Image 1: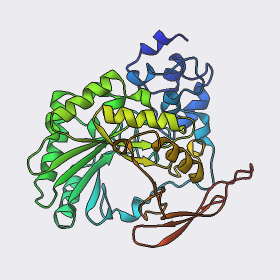
Image 2 (image 1 turned 90 degrees about the vertical axis):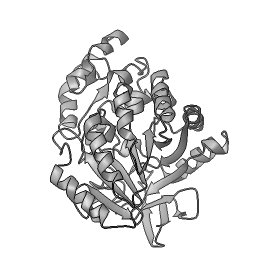
Image 3 (image 1 turned 45 degrees about the vertical axis):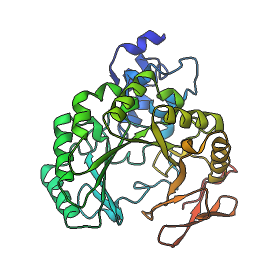
Image 4 (image 1 turned 30 degrees about the vertical axis):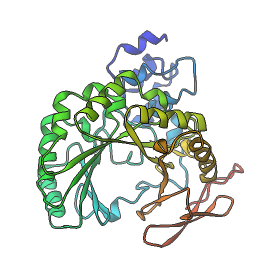
Length: 364
């Protein structure tokens, strides 16, 4: 199907939409229906228009078009790969680090990444908005823990909320005296930039707390002229931006691609912040690469950019033990594929990667 046919639908959701748009093979609808029955799919027209129809391994399509590979089970897959549940004292809250807490406002996104580590709990029919009573309980939890200085809004994508709902949540959080920073993680500025309106930007600005937005992008082509325009609008309104990227096989596992992405962030006034090693989310094994390969790729990329364009390459230790840098002594390879990870509290964890010999990967 020709490229213009991809413009017929504002958002691709059903397998038939992807087939009709030329982004999935004809006749693949039934097979993809089994994927989307488990993991929601959504791809905006803005992103679909970035796909090169002549590239079967297009890095934009790889991130958003459902694939039957997502139904391949890996023994190392974890439903809760970064361990949110053990650190959730009440609905919607994750309190893993003493001075900051996550607040999951919504379980929906305008697009669904095929590698999402919360794919089992985010999507159509998986919760929607945090109920008012749960939101009130979450605020009470934060209010009584004076060590919490930063609240991180996640989900789902908080910027998919209406400006009215977002403004109400922002005001309620900012009224907690010991909370000085509200950070929002979002795909919206690059994946659904039309949602970044003056009303949405106004909703982000509150008295009593500084607002930061972490913009998630994984390939330089995502930083379109429109995305840069919307990021500029946020910056010029006084909202500082940082980046979040996942190192993904077949998308950005190339030093030049990563260097171009980090330079693109800096040019868009987005400070490179985190580059995540992929998590052990179900159905995402085809995106993963060995840590040793990641280290080599990242090191080569960082040699090509200035200090301003260097993110921290990190891994969330499975089980909820926190985030560590993969470029430092916290991660040591004891033998090929066998790692010793030291968490922020000094505890040591074994981390076993999939075998490279074609054998089934060992469970972690």
